Amino acid sequence: MLKGYSVPRTPLGLAAVTPPPPWHYSGDLIGVEYWADPKATACLLPDGLSPDPQTNGHATLLFGDWQFTASGEELLDPARYQCRECLILIDAVWRDMPVTFCPFDFVDNDAAIARGWVKGYPRRLGSVFQTRSFSAPSPAAAPIAPGSRFTGSLSACGRRLAAAHITLRQAEPDVTKIFSRPVVNLRWFPRLEAGKHEKPTVEELVLSVTDDLQIVEMWTGEGDICLPRNPGEEMQMLTPVRTGMGFRCSVSFSVTDLKILESPDSRGYVPHVG
Image (cartoon, rainbow, N blue to C red; front, side):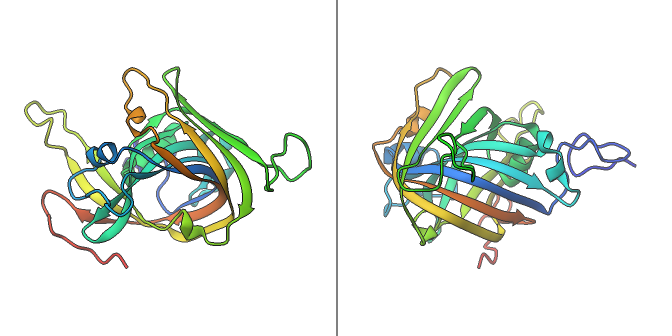
């Protein structure tokens, strides 16, 4: 009997690219909130989501430096299960619920790509880096303090796709100033069968569920973003019209579930999302 939560399935199941849930994450985030052209954010939303007229093009560029484990002490295999990430979240509405949607997401290993596709994140392989903070005092330590500066960068296929620069000014006790909306994603798995390329095997609008979410050491300040134009890429359509807060924080959460909001076979299905 073949085993494994994901491919490749093998007699022992050890070669699977990612283990089964529960999945636990801890990491440091830096990011910048900003506003893009509302027409650009609107055209990236899938069926079932609509633009949020209250925030009118609001988006967030995020960089994450993550450590992961499931139930097998995967944190002791850092080469396979640490990852760095860059993604964009745009404001939207599902029915009358404010949410965010992720149109672009890059990580630097295959295990993170596999988990992302299961959750509906449109992950691609990229090279992602961000400034790290360390406890021992040093000019290279980037302390969590007023005036400290942090940078995140993303490249893929040999091209720079995104960069963010943040200068911290003050601690922010109210994390909802940045993180106040759940994430809704599109799980989409296409068919290869001729004549059915536009009829995916899976098409689900899903609500991300995070257990035991903790956000600590939130600091805010100024931030700016660069999304260079590149052939074959479309992140640049979300170039800022204006920027808001830059921020840095540490985050932990677990994932064991998601909620299906809509699918072609069940339009109108409304799960309990409280």
